[in-house]
Image: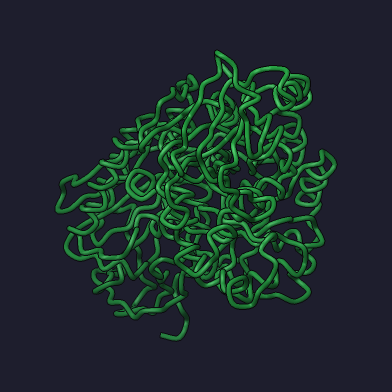
Length: 599
């Protein structure tokens, strides 16, 4: 059942009547301080009247809107702020379905999300996107879906379960919950005039919708200008002040993210706090938050708090998580502010700096109080084939993870993927490794990584090396969350444990598992597309906590290292990645050899 809200046009007669005092409101909130993100001011004593899930009257005195049936909420001196909007995020990163993600973030004050389900698109194609879209529309808050643009994210460098075509994009633009095109990660394709990428962006713009950007190159010259000329309207890949400035100067929205492993607000917000740039073109987002962050730390409320801690004016920080976001997606007259006609999404908080989320109202109904959800978030009936997506073709053994050395070598120089804590980019390192019985062996903090094909059942395994996790002993970690093509990534110090971990995920239909000395330490089952659980966030987070503890037991001390693990196959972010086709040099956007020639 879709949570329907009538349009402003449909409700206008009623809203006019309530605001004029000829009809009574469903709900009036009085006794508070209204944070007006349109004018960037706090209006003490202003009241709001709500009717049909929308704001009717907003002003100093709503007593003329009150009748015998009107519910009255006394704000008791608290601030009224708009419901928070996440401008760019992936529900699948929380390992949750849209329903359970909504249930997790509603108590944190998130009432609108702009989501790009490109993870499921890589596994189940357009049909998977439709399932996510349909469950999103069933929720009591606003979840808009962006049609994924890049599956595969880098054609020729990886193989996905399904490919997204320009025709798929054009079809999706007619669906009710589609707000635009998901992040256009194939920036080389756009810059070089790739017909499919340009056709996808054209279909989106012809539908009057927003093209999402993803520009992960340091080149801010002609290449960047060409990318923006193609139609990408926002970008969240900036990591430094100069990145944020470059984007807004060319008319893009600079989306600054604080996710579970992305800390890109502090380094960019100085464009506003120190350089004094106009903040209307800056938006706060999360991009990727895992369930533990949602349960323990928050969601957009955490990002806003962080922006304020970084020296941002609280009202500007709130604008970057409400009205700026809504305006960017063409929804400024639908949501993002407490103003007549807009959806009645409002939060009561006693402090706009520390931002405790005490009472959340969405579409005029209380959806959470004091950190607890008070509404149902309905589930979609996920079909069996969406739960049976790990197709390895065969059980794997130690030999599948062997890396034979070139004949006659006692040691070899190899390329190594270097993990960088709290950052998406990796380093392209090299290491000299010994050869034992004809096979290359990892040493110290350099050990094996494998990508196991899981969509077509080819039985293919690509082997390489990675460093930076700090693993020791005989261990392995395997995950079917492997951005973006979502094959299976296995990292391990021991081939037998790697095989055991991979086979375990084949048994359970996907997820994350950690093995040590031949025994399983932790398992997070993710049966839907090998990406998501339909269990509540707290249960998934508890299993994720066991996973983190197991990684620590294996020697890993990095913050949110699971996120780093899951991105090792992300062939659109520099420098070195792994795919089902081999090692990928993302700087050159081409496949590269594991072995260096000069030894």
